[in-house]
Image (cartoon, rainbow, N blue to C red; front, top):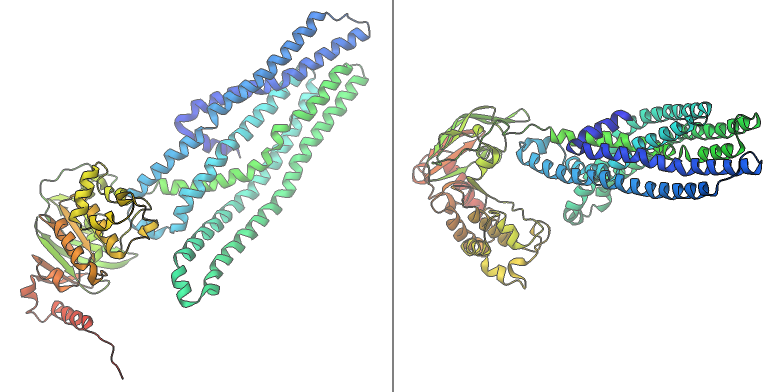
Length: 584
């Protein structure tokens, strides 16, 4: 338990001074809790002595005691307020920074990280796990550390009256701590399983929601819901198991503290009967017995929460400590933008995707890449952008090895337009401005006009301020594609990669898209993955890939004369485009 508290304190980092100041206020807060009880005991003892004619009460002492109690109550509220101001906001400030930092980390890891880690696990870590830490992290420090500060401060106060009573209270705390230790061992075994069940629930739910159109079209609602039901059932079972393990150790923890409270009452009465303690002080000790363990009793709930936090922090640190793909990179400015692949090989999950691939792309030329599915076309584009690191060989842009760049300094030279467009749940204006956050509204409009999307944007009642919904749900495929091209135009990078950007465009939008692409690619170094003859036939260079190797290289007029994969590919494409439904 204390190891996890220590881990949280280390994680807090630069906020430690505020945390420690909060502990000091917690100590004084505990004293201000004890002072009114002690003052009340002292006042009752004076009254008792006066009643017994042992010593006459001085009225001024009643005023002093009343004032002391009043100031103690004010001190209690003030120290509680100051502790909260110093400590409670720490975790919110820290987790906000942590989310931003994790976002930066995820930008700099290879794409393989997202394929080896389930999206549900990453989503849970960034949302649920950090939220759990945000919600309970500082509360657990307050409950445990400030709880023990409180009980030991009150035990210290008992020492001034009777060392045996203080020792009895200490014994109760020790037995309680042992019970909490064993409870922590059980919680450690269950917390990992609990978090896995949470990740499964999130992953299954996301998968179900994304697949609803397919599920409905095939009428498989009952079949598809089974994964969610299984995930929810596992979550239910692990929660029940946690509760069953919690009960016996929690009972022992509370029994230790309640027994110590009873012992305090018994010993106070015993000492009073033997004349070793006055009746008023005995009454004061009985009041102490009811309040002394109040803060420690609630630690039982903290143990399981701390184990959950410990497991959460393991998952969060796994993301934070992911190896950056550009850890040794620097900010490099390029003067030329030719691209060179030098004997590049790349494997994914031990499957060879590219095998000793070499080619050159001159600056301000267009290179088309074609080949069958799985031949490595998209992989080449991803490697140019350094979404993955190659196994062997070298890739150069402007005579600089891309391994020497930081991700930001490399990617500011590259614009990418994908077949599958992703738009944010934001306004059209912000989605386009994403290409250049420093762009003015006028520049966004100019880019939109070049991308042939200004007219349909202005047809919306709110124009550029129109919210487009999640993934651009309110727009057609062609409209989304043109917005993505406007975004790339606004970025104005010298290298443009088009990955099947026109593959699934309907005829109505095709000429708009082609005009937009012409604006985007004018005067740039272009890499195109495409299968349409109209798109590739005017390329300065065509690379034909098959099984991870370049099997043909040249221009359209040369390759069409060769009896190779390129000619065969175009013949297949021509036949596919001319298909029709035959009638009986």
